[in-house]
Length: 557
Image (cartoon, rainbow, N blue to C red; front, top):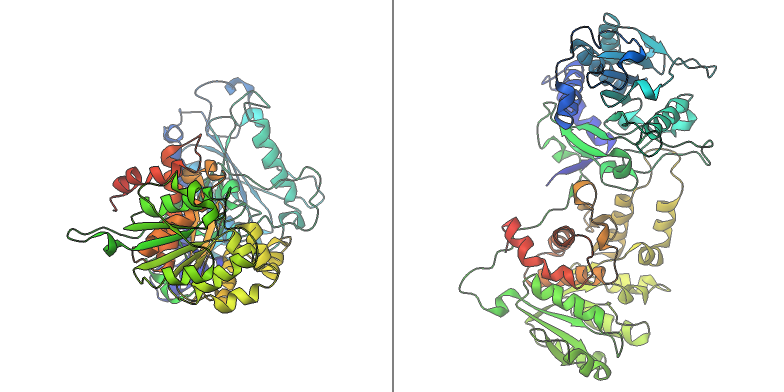
């Protein structure tokens, strides 16, 4: 799995490598700058073409070049007061050596730069000037969109992973505002000419590394907006912000560059989050249906049966050997008219449920989708939990306990998965929700990973906290993020019933023998893949039908 690191974890990995003598900080900075330039040319190969002799060698602003296909390659590099700024000086030098016209601006004082950044500042000064930020507000940094067109870059090397304060707390926030305005004015919609490319090093300045939240101090200045990059280049591994909250939207495309740090160096850090990926779950020849588990999903009453059937279909398609819908008498006919391969069993109340669960071959149970709110739902949930078999609780099975979540937490066990969306999470964990939704004014801000880990520890079971940045955590602190962003963006999942199908996927995988954590991770991953496979126009009924194609493509069965 791909690791998602915090700022402190990344710093610890770098410092361990430096202390061991494997590499120096200066070498890491050089490799980082080289990685940024490589990523730029990989993303936009046309920028890698040699610059025409005489063009681009100076920052001349002659209008004769405007609109021509052979317009000079121009770059503005904004360097901050830390090592992120040092990376920016390397990028500026490498572009200058390729014949680009490069303007460099520094927020901060050269003599206060960290040692490695200071070395690269001096190396750049042999090639070009550095314009300082002028504290009286008359900054030398003034963007001219019409002169920085499709052959141009703005490199954001201001604050990176070390940012702990809102950008508007710095005098440099005026630069950030200019970048946003420059990008908007350069858009086809507002200015009529192609926008220059914005490249951020590590993270767009203003994003908290650990939470993905935009760090803001109360109400930002009028028209202020943090940098939104076209390309973000980070090193060694993605950071949590690349998968959480506002981070993906601000980052644009994220590219990870290797800077020579050894894989696995984070193993000793503890608490490292992962990107969710599917677990191998092949069916083996010679087995029969009971070898692959029997899942039971409880239906609501008359008029509330669709959610359970969606979940049941998901459990069956994901590979459970048998799937049964447990239905109250009032909904038996309604369910019977629409079920074929899925079996149907009448269950009226906890006593009949207990009788059915005497069959130990039923090894996974899902409660909640369409089950309804009332004392009967709570009794059914408690009846299943006392069996301590694989259990998935969703929707109504969670909301039922909003007045007294402690009752639920006492009954939950390690073989359970609960799947709250934002509203359900707030009902069960109001204190954690309050912390999560508090304004992010300092970094590292409280993150969805932090909240889900605490929730899992409190509940004593796996918690899958739904959203485009779905976070899955176990009581022991293991955590993964299923990010539906970038090339995996699947906005069509915002449709009624998609969460019911997800609950069914988890239940089916637990019936097949995956652990609660493995089942939740795999189900969340496949859920997104099914949506991507279908595309626009998706409704919940379509999701289970994508499973065969998705499993073949991923070579898992």
